[in-house]
Image (cartoon, rainbow, N blue to C red; front, side, top):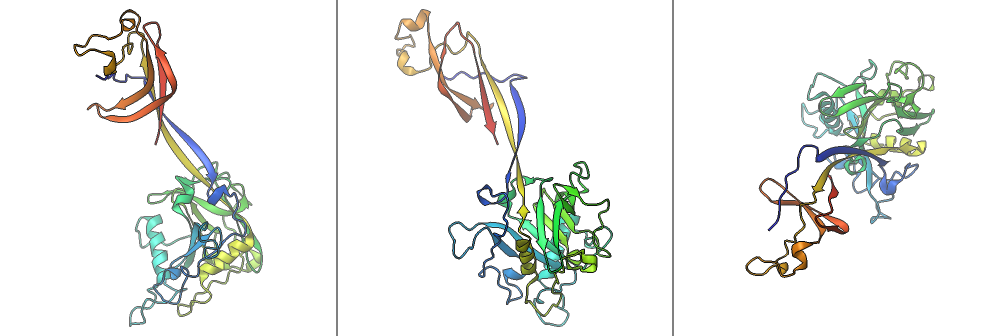
Length: 351
């Protein structure tokens, strides 16, 4: 019959270990120019096709290397009034109802908790349109790591090097959004440090955007990317024609990312652990519970087990209050036990 000993105060300890790794497949630090789309997924001929809502980006060509291709992130384009993608229908009163409007509304609801009166504002500037880079859920684990994020965008007028401003702001988030968690500014700079003393980097167009590490996505200011004043933007030339889907805006941003040649992103995983200290005192567990050691009347078969018993601890079982077995810990080798020995076995559970 098993012996159950309850854990006492001080017998358990909680711990959290934070693990960082590259967010990209095969622990690749930088995607460089490896940004591939799928023609099957990114189809934009129909107003309701998936390509009008988002473009999935792979680490390798998904057609030539279908066995190893994995989605790394997706790109979406949103417009407050629905421009930039086809209207769902051409019926009277349906103008402006498109994939672009659906995307803008979706992310506005996520960030601002369903407040339809609140539009995206970047350092005081409220553009009509945004770009979204949504990192694949399996890539960023618990959250994105701030402080080493790097995204280079290249356009017709200049190259833009973007990072978060987590180091600049002493590690504190710019804001906490109820639906998506921390919000950091997306700024020109590197290593979490912005260039200059202001968040306004594009004249009359506002800052470049925000990054939400806990939700795994980035919002980019469309006006800032389109800007050409004083070479501050990259002249992305977003297509704002609601009747024209060529070239798609998602493809424009993908090309700017690929031409920039640098996209560094790390995942952050918090591994919660609980340590159980199993204390075996000298008077405990000196007799085996194996039925082969006893007679039918309960007496021991072997005399050596009477005066000088010795057992070997091989397994520790963790039970709930109802004595249901919840977890089993195996020792690397049998642990000798008799009346002259005590033992302390540390059991670690990760979850």
